[in-house]
Image (tube, rainbow, N blue to C red; front, side, top):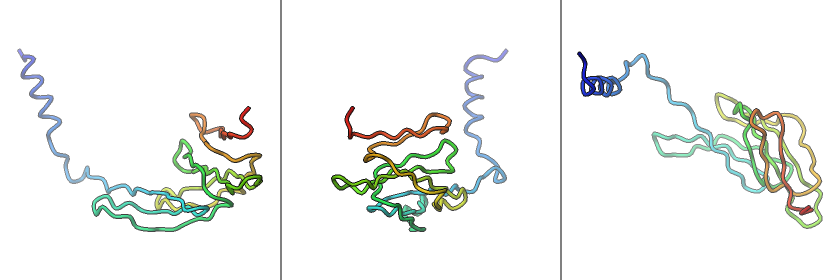
Length: 138
């Protein structure tokens, strides 16, 4: 009869067995997006080498305020604004994310907003976008 201690030892040993070389996967590329004003920069993260490699940039219609990914990971929604009092330059832009490289490309025209966006998100399946404004406060 197998004891509790023997069973636990077998279980722990099964997790410690290294995977065969055929089971190894190629490391997944990691993309990092950073904005400087209206420019959204794309960097590839070299995890093993602890380095950032600039891969490209896309210019949006105004300064980036906030970004939120689509649930599929294939799109990025970006809220942007001119940040000047009385400005009417406020937008939401959909960007397509290349699944292999992480490169960003425009996915349709930007949508103009009535006020400066301070937050953007989607519902769980990413069927709808929610944009929050602080003016008017009501």
